[in-house]
Image (cartoon, rainbow, N blue to C red; front, side):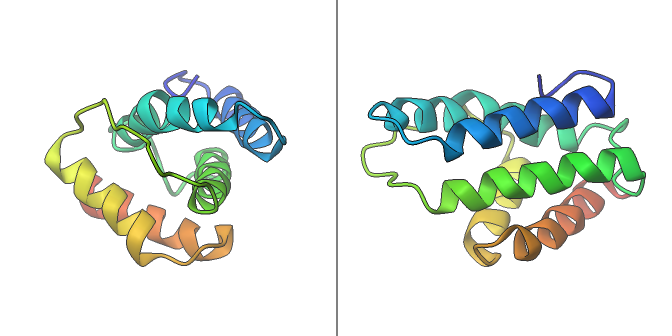
Length: 123
């Protein structure tokens, strides 16, 4: 879902995960683990690909939806979460910057994502 070439479809998939995070559930911790270990690493890899044009309006909507997901993740109980994917160092640093140094709202997170994509992708 995070690596489909069509930006409209990708945005729709990201929005789907955002809505799932918004749902109350007894098993939410399992889903948050999936988001951290599968969705998030895949999304981080995809936004740093050369074909991800952060200045394009359609791709920009993907960034907005991704910022919503990250804002929701910042509100989750992450105790006991085990990170199982190994990301390249520059992507780990970018994710750390996004999650630790940005605010907790989508509006505060989105510009940090754009800045990181431009810095890492040199676009």
